Length: 121
Image 1 (cartoon, rainbow, N blue to C red):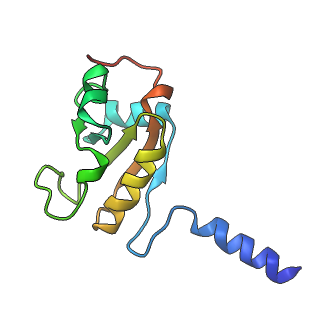
Image 2: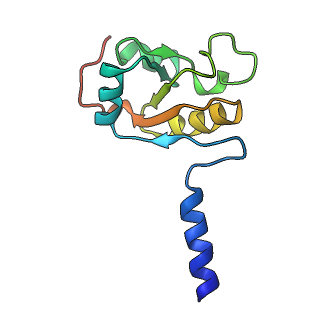
Image 3: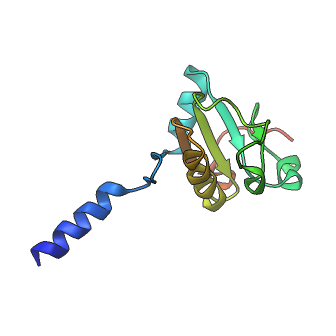
């Protein structure tokens, strides 16, 4: 029983970490606070057609499939990046990819479906 508890505790502590580092999952409210008070890059990882239907102001469209080494549209690795998609699935995958590429300040705030603030079309 003790070894199972230790294993579960270890898994809980690992959370969203990878070999290169980790990212943090935050609420839409926290993301909005960061947008309003810090210099951040807002990264939309949906497809262009989805982006055109509505997106968060000042967000940068870089579809999940294009997040890879050598993509010159990606911001600096030292930049604080807030990642979102439609529902939260692709943003989590994008956050993991960014961490694996060496990005250190990654925050996943899920999907635009849960975004209670204004969007642009």
